Amino acid sequence: MQGPGTPTLDQLRVFLTVVESGSFAAAGRRLNRATSVVSYTVANLELQLGVSLFDRESTRRPQLTEAGRAVLAEARTIAHGIDGLRARVSGLLGGLEAEVAFVSSVLLPGDRLVDALTAFQVRFPTVALRLNVEALGTAQDFVASGKAQIGISVEFWNRETDPLERIAVGEVEMLTVAAPGHPLARGEQPPGAAREQIQLVITDRSPLSHGQEFGVVASRTWRLSDLSTKHTLLLAGIGWGSMPAHMVEADIAAGRLVELRLPEATRRRLPLTAIYRTDHPPGPAGRWLIRRFVEQAEAQSLFPETPTAATA
Image (cartoon, rainbow, N blue to C red; front, side, top):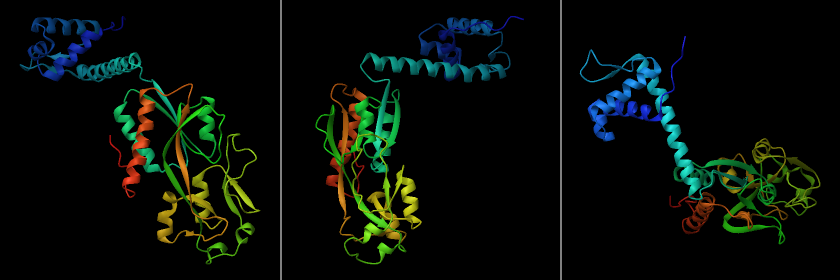
């Protein structure tokens, strides 16, 4: 038994136009074709597929048959795929990236990341995004090595010889915290008290900070690979450590965590920096994403309570 033939894209578009407009005559007006040409095109499509798509007998207006409804779903999928292909190729011809590889520091507030990526999706629907969230020097390493085109990094050290361009996009405040029952949470502590308690420290997967310690004062440390695990252990009363303010402010307000008063570990602000390789600058979509983070920082400086008040 011979299977169905291969319909043309034009036949499928005419079929979809008839369904959307409600009649062959209305489809002809929309397509600027004679009604007889529209009817002939649909008849050829039915002949190619070997099924009747419309019931032309029982009603004055063409009604989809059961087979027609099944073909309609597939025809729409094909048409949308072609439209997406054309949009992507049009963007490529205009210099738009097919994909943006973006790496973010784990310290970047989540509301800022969501705001930027939501707006990016609306502005560049044809551009794929590859996202990594990393700690310490890994974001820098990803961009410097070419694993990512752009990134948001928190720099703890000065690297004058790397190939990165840097753009300030605000800062993140760090608080030193522990659970209420932790020994360091019992009021102001004398110098050196923190050294005797387990400090929770995020490890760096990159080689950039090898041999360097940032904010580590305790002689006993537990090394963790991600910030959420550190947060969980802090809430459980296992150790003490620094956390981004936006991640622990609600816990402090609810009494689940306490901000510690330690001479060795006070509040500090870390600069957030957008980075990319100077010899491989981002395209239009990447530049737009960096600009979004800049606008967020500008809005935060004007309206501290609304850090993501940036223009779309």
